[in-house]
Amino acid sequence: MADWNVAFDYVASYMMLVIAAWYVIEKKIPLKSYVAFRLLVNTAIVATMLEIIVTHLLRRQIASDMVYHLVSAQTFIIHFLAVLFAKYSFSLSRLTDKVVNRIKQVLIVVMSMELMLVVVNYFTDILFTIENERYVAHQGMLLLVLVDLAMIGLAIYNMIKYVTDISVFKSITIIANIFVVLVAGFAQIVLGIPVLNSAIATLLLTLCHYLHNPDTVKDQTTQLFNRKMLGKYVINLYEQKKPFDVIMVAMDDFKFINKTYGARVGDKLLLSVGNYLTQLEVPKYVFRFGSDQFCIVVDKKGQKLDDITDGIINRFRHPWYGGTEIGIMMSASICCVTCPKDADDYGSLVEVIDYSMAVAKKSRKGMVSKVENLELDKLKREKDIEKALRLAMDRDEFMVYYQPIYSIKKGKYNSAEALVRMNDEELGWVSPEDFIPIAEKNGLIVSMGEMILEKVCKFIHDYDIMETSIEYIEVNISSVQLMQLDFVERVKSILEKYDVKPQQINMEITETATMGNMSIINKNIEKLVEYGINFSLDDYGSGNANIDYINHMPFKIIKLDKYIIWDAFKDLKAGVTLKYTIQMLNELELLIVAEGVETAEMKDKLAAVGCHYMQGWYYSKAVCDEEFKKLLSA
Image 1 (spheres, rainbow, N blue to C red):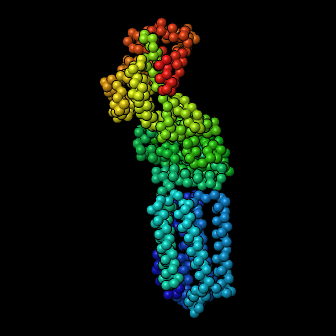
Image 2 (cartoon, rainbow, N blue to C red):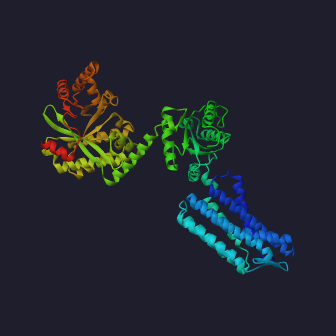
């Protein structure tokens, strides 16, 4: 040791001190892996410093009890590093509590054995001696080296098998650095080249860069932990089975503030809000969850949620200052989630947060909501339906049912409405009123709509619909479909594929289907009308369709909503309203379909006041394609 070149150790200590200082300056990260990494760094620093001190003392030929004690401490600590590294590797993986406890017991036994060997060395010289002011290693040191190899091998095995959050490239780089440490250990023990601590420092720098860089879990605008860090922290809490509360704070209409005052002022306001939430005197961690959303994870043992949320709401009643002398008033919607009662894993928590904040901003803006008071069953149902939708898409399991439409003038069926049906193994039959809005929200409606149109065109082609009394099939179209730039081309390609004439397809839309980018929607409708496809306005009279759409959109057919039909047969005023509505539509030379016709009386009266077509259970409910063929034949 006395003749070692300590320059390597100086470089190693410098690199490790830089890492340690960085972690002192940065916000303390409450994760097991970060805690284990800090302990690893600090222990490596102590081991390196002791090696430098001992080397200098031996160079001065100081052989005293103090030197012997320092060498013993340095021997234990440098070998204890291997145990700590194994422990650190397991902090990166997600193992069951049972496995973790067994690993802890093994590591405690190994550490105790190493400590015992160092203590026994005082009486037996089994590990080393200091002879003539020189450090001399003995055969017992081989046992410590073998233990080190076993610990490092265990760490490598764990990283390869259980650590899933590390990419292949990062894993290879880290493992390569571990092998460099092993080679450096061999060089130091056998060849007397003191490069072990430098290799350890390089490994620690690699781990810091790839796995423990504080900047990757920090939001640069507010200096709070980011959403990535929230996921890691909450997953740890779930794994440790610790109950906790989550308070979501979302600024209302923050986009308006950014537009009015500028992004720079907006960022300073976010920083002010983040600083305020951080200073709340409760056991918590604060995260920036979204652009205008903060998430507070509160320890269950802390203050009551109502007291915390009341304080936050009260603060938002006062102005905030974003680098300007003028105070800016903001409101915030707050939602509280109790875990694991309201959400039993991180994925569920994010879903609950997203849903509850959407509900809160819609109906309880500027107020506090608790998830337990919201309809979480509805959220679960929506997620189950979305899953069923994707499964049905992948398996092509959507079914098309046809409900015939009767022509009063011709005295027979002249058309039919195509209605999509979904039967899931777990959910059973799911109503279109439930799954269509979900499909529109997640974008599946585009692919679904094409799939339905293709099934209808195939049916028209295969059944040779022109040989029956059916002149056309009505297909429901969503606003999401109408806003697709290539919608017209997609429709044309499907019709041409099955040799279906445009006049054989009638597209049925509601007023809501024209809400969106009106420029694109109007162009698509115009192109399809020019192509030869007619349009129907559905649900007229329900509140979702009005006279303005009739005047400005190229509708050929108006479908009267079944509820106003039913009301007309129950209420005198509703009957008068319906009568004159039908008269108006006739004067506009529009064809009228009465939906929801269920009795002969309804049929006769509706025909008498001027309805051209009837649709409802009096004639037939919606049936599958085979039943529809039989219906037409009969």
